[in-house]
Structures are given as C-alpha cells and as structure tokens.
Image: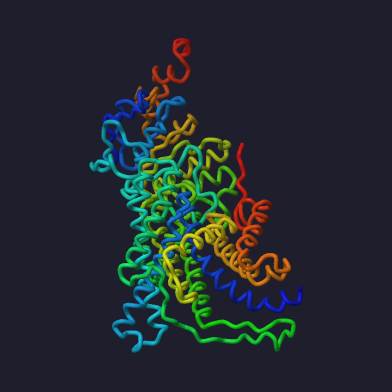
Length: 330
Length: 258
C-alpha cells in the first residue's frame, strides 16, 4: 500500500502544484481585500470565473477572425491573459465603487457588506451565463486546446521507487505565470510606496488618511490588483482544464478562501503557501483515498480529506500557519 | 503673518457641545500651545483642523483658504499633519516604513507605474529610503531603522510619530500631548527637538500639552480652553497669572486663596 502511494507521488506533486498555484493566486484576492476592509468578498470567486470567460470569449473571437493561425500561441496567450486581467481588474474596482463603498460611507456593519458580496456573486454568475448562452447557445464552454504538448518527467530512472510523472506544457505555463504574479505582488506590497500605503490602511485606516493617504484610492488599487490576478488565473484555469461553466467560481472560491484562512487571513505570503498546500493535499487525496481506505472511499471524497486537514491545522493554530496570534491587551 | 486662522469654530455631538465658538490666529513659524483641563475639547479641536471631524459651524483658514469639508488626506496635502495623544503608529511595519508612509503624498509615482515597475519609480523609492533614514537620524532613531514600530520603547515611539509627521514636510505640525508619559530627561530632549524643528524645518507648531513647565518654556502664545470654550489667550506670562485659568485648573477657592 505504502509503496503504491510513494510510486504516484511525483504525479501527485505535479497535479497538486498546478491546482495549488491557482488556489494561491485566487486566495491572494481574498486575503488582500480582507486585510484592508475586513470583508470576505464572496464575489471574488466569480471574478475568477468571469476572467476565464473573458479569456474564452477572446480566444473564440481571435479564432473566428483567423488570428490564431498567424501568431504563435504564446503571444496569443499573453494578449488574452492581459485583456482578461484588465477587464476583471476594472470590474473589481467597479463592484467596490457601486456596492461596497456606499456601505462604507454609511458605516454599515460588516455583515451587510458580506451579504452584498454574496448578492454580487449570484449576479455575476447569472450575467455570465446569460451572455454565454446568448452568444454560443450553451453556458458550458470548452476552449480549443492550447499548450497540449505532453512531457514525461523521467523520475523513475533516478529514483526507482517513483513512477514517472507526465504533464502538459500548460502546466509550465500555469506555474511560470503564477510564480511571476506571486513574486511581483510580493515586491509590490513589501517594497513600494503603494504597497506600504496598503499595509498602513490595513492596520489603521484613519491614521493612514491623516498621513496623507487617500484611503479610497488605496482600496480601489487593492481591488484592481486582487481582481486582475483572479481574472488572469481564470484564464490559466481555462488553459489547464479546458472546460468552464459559470459556477466554477463558487467551489474554487470557497477553497481559495479556505487556503487564505489556512495561511492566516490578511497575510499574503500565507495565502500563497496555503493555496499550494491545499492543492497538493487535495490531489494527494484524489490519488490515494481509495488505496488508503481499501476502496471504501473514492477520489470524490478528496475535499473531505483536505478539509479535515484544514480543521486540524486550525484547531492547533487558529490564526493560520502564517498568521500572528492576536494578543489581547489589558 | 498668520498662517492659520480659526473662526468661531463649534462642534456639537448631538446635544453635547464639545467646542463652542473658538477663534484663534496662529502666526507663521510660531509655537502655539493649546492647554486646558481634561475634557476641555482640545483634541476635538485638533480633530476638526485635520478633518477627522467636520465642524458644526465656523471656519478654518490655512493661508486664507478654507479647509472645511476637505478629507483628512487632502488637509495633509495642504500641509497640516499631526501626532496623536495615544500613539497611533503602524506598529507592524518597520520604523523606516512608518516614515515612508508619511512621505506618501510627496512621492510622485502613480500606482500603475509602480505595478509596471518603471525605472524612474524604482529610483524614486530608493531616494525616499535615503531621505527617510535622514529624518530618522534627525530625531535620533537611526538605530531602530528595521525594528517593528510596536517594539520601540515609549519615548522612541513618540519621536517616531514626529518623524512620520515631518516626513510629509508640513507647514503646520500639530502635536497632541507629545510629552505625555515621558520622564524629565525625555521631555527635555523633546523640548529641544521642537525648538530645532521650528528653526530648521521652518514649520509652525501647535501643541496640546499638560506639562506646564514645557508649555511655559516653549510657547510663543497660549490658548486656554475649558468646557469647550476659549477662556484666555496670551503670552506665557499673561497666562500664568490669569485668574480664570487658575480657576479652571484648581477651582474657584484656590484662586481666591492665591
């Protein structure tokens, strides 16, 4: 049994990292908004979904005008991901303007903003479904294959107790793009004046504004970056998994949110780590649950496994892996 | 020349009048103290100048331009910054970062440029760090640069608040009880710092303070509030001997005894 599990580890790792990178970037969107507004922005999962649909729409459009045959798919991909990021970034800022800022101005309780975000989430799902059905007659879209070249990672010849792992070139695209996004965000938040302003607003909004920081502007920037990253990840999801529907944002959003909590909500590096960890755990469970439980459970129970781990972690470290324990001052 | 002109400033919270009909004028490059017993409305007064509260009536003029109705960050932009009675540093950020936050509005970089990592912006961020370090040297905190602000000793935190405030190169600096909780030695060096800032940074200082030794030593002019009203104003010597001021602090009997 153990041998079987060990044999599949390289493949689990490849699949788990792919999924984990996607969770990580979406988790950042949750954690940034939470850090600055203490709002769980449930619409964020659907921003991710909208990004994947914008990407699919662009892809179909560029196909139909014959653009795809004349340029290499990497350039096509870069154009699509940039457009999707900008569209979703602007969408995120717009949602904040229309739905959250008025509540903030009236000092509404945080619960109200939370409920609003759930409403926005439904609106986005159905708006995307409506447009997709109008344009294509079906709300489940399958993207034309891109980056499908298969590679075999020859682990077996080096470590005989492992099986070989295979992956598509899309795995490389997803990994490289997410790593670039994660590193640039980390630099932005930790090294630049806007990142510093963001952290200042997150800690004490009033003092930050008395130190000349335009708080609303900083919040808009936060929403733009979080949403643009989410939308770009939607495109990565499309390329990696091929099929999308307007409801992919819900479950993925909840898992990404979970990842953010696992890492310590409000902590960006924590969200990155939590996302990758959750992805790997989930894939590990998918591959091995039936072996471990002697076929009593199949891979469909992978979420249960991942969430049991989550609960265990939170019981022993409620502030999350990277979070700081709140110290009550007396 | 008066840099700041306060006209009939009133703030009511529901039925409670926190400050009523306060007028004052502050000369450029002077040190002005606002004193009064606890609950006299001093901090409310500061909060109105920095736009945390909107006055119920009255006007605040900086170089003849009204500040009423602006947002706090805009007031800061026009050149008024402050420190706080109970320290409000960004305690999880480093000492250097706190000062950099204070410089926020002076750095030109737009956030789009920052995202794109344009070289001009990177250069500006580097220069800002050098300048922030100089400010920390000036207030004597250069040894703490990379320390979390929350870990500093109390007196150093007060200095850091001042460093963060002067980082925006203000025209007017509001200090809300800068010497609170300091020992005599710390108070002495704070007094020197305030004097030095006035001459070297060319800044006008308004302070709220309970330490009368410091107030009398440092101020060019003093305003006294009690129960939200302005009960006296004048040079330190006038205030020291003002009957109403003594009454406000010590009660009527005390003043008749004296």
